Amino acid sequence: MNTSSNPDLPAMRGVFVTATDTEVGKTVIAGAIAKSLNAEGVRTEVFKPAASGCHHAGGDLVSEDAEFLAACADSARPLNEIAPLRYRAALAPNVAAQRAGREVDIEAMLASYRRLEGKCDAVVVEGVGGLLCPISDDLWVIHLALMMQLPVVIVARPDLGTINHTLLTIHAARSAGLHVAGVIINRYQIDPNQTDGPDDVIAMMTNPAQIAEKGQVPILALAPDDPQTSVSKSILGPDVSYAIDQVDWKSIIAGA
Figure 1 (cartoon, rainbow, N blue to C red):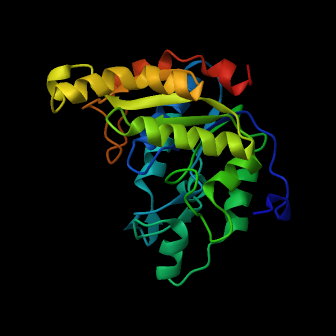
Figure 2: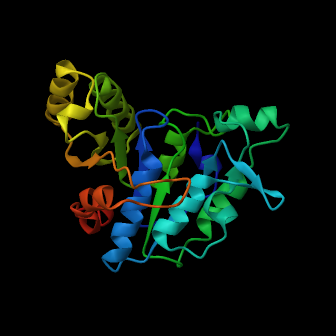
Figure 3: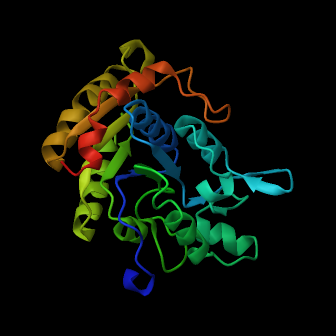
């Protein structure tokens, strides 16, 4: 897609959080990054351009992910500004919109992002699905990331198969001209007794080094599976917060 067909987006500091797949936990990581930046005195807002699997509340569709992100960032912005495109079906946005008999309003999405200009010091954007997930038929997550020009943080699984998925995501991002700031491996099992067997332990223990070496990318954090974290209850647990707090986010958003 030629992204020049859309008006330029404001140049902002922040990060674009994507993942190797859906249900990897990028919402938790995005919220934790926003909370960490705010704790460092960086006034941070959150933005989720499209949300699927929303529920009805008060006559509107509400995204649990947007509620969680807003709570983590202590944001007072309306939820429909944080997640401007919302769909009931838990499907790719273009498919969910088609099934709902609606057009994907890309301009409304971009307008919500533009309204962040001057309202914060940094923005944490959480993509939907992975980089090649379509938002509309013509605009995919990777196109939006290119328009925003934010450093990309990739959230990956800890287990077998993640090397391939993560390296493919890194390759797609770099081939498009995006800067990959690093990888966060989420739901990392610190206790080997929590894994399914010895091969899983070895895979989990060796995957971070393999991804770092083969992808020539920093592993920013190993975020544990935190039982106190709940997106549905807008609660960020202390274990994942601690892991994310160890990252120098100020340098990353500054492009250092």
